[in-house]
Image 1 (cartoon, rainbow, N blue to C red):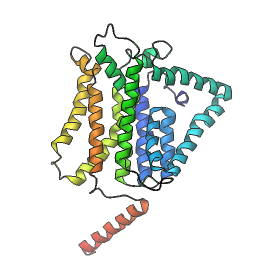
Image 2: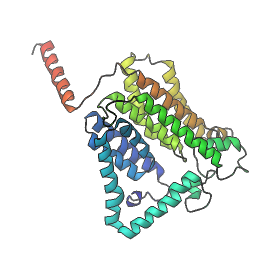
Image 3: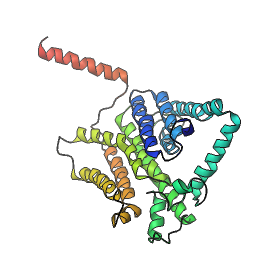
Image 4: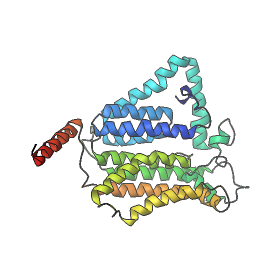
Length: 319
């Protein structure tokens, strides 16, 4: 789908990051909080169509057995990935492009490849700035940049996927099993949205190519955490633990942006990865303590709350 967007063929990842932030976060969160689960699925499908890694967020509605949200995602994916390309390029060229994408991006990224048209920018492990567990483990095993292999070993890749699976399983288990075994729903509450957004850092960690600027997509998670903290603690009394988490994430990106001297080792040996994992762990802890955060069940409740506020204000002012 990205080939239909001008300027997204090569070296436009930061621009795509901004687009993903808009597509799969802001409108999707608003739709969930309003109880529009079908619409939320459509917004999520738009992000997955632009870039593959947001597909991990589908694990949450699947865990909740929210068939309405999953149906919206399926409709959006079929429209964006099949109907539109076939209309624009025709069936034959669409098939050719998907075959190329599968072999040169998906398979090469999973298995690792030091050759091919995407090796220099994407799949060769030593030629791109990545902070995934696979890359960090590979760098620790081969600290000398000059003799470091361009492809990680199968064992390292296996460890990477085991770490990703365990983190995903932990996130889903902590979110709880709700509803019947065959059907459920993503509730219109801050806690549900927060658990789904907690998968965003995991989305970065799971991909074999984790560029540092991907963390900008975690902004919705940070804002939701701030809402939770503001509901629990008075102004200026945020616990030191959370100040450390936010400070650690900020400092890790500042230090690893310096492309010289000892700062290169901080980049290659996982400072950004460790700060992202810290943000993920902290978000799970904060969400489990969300008892004081009010539920938002839909536009009707929002309108009712607004009317009650106006009524109480009129009564208090005597008008």
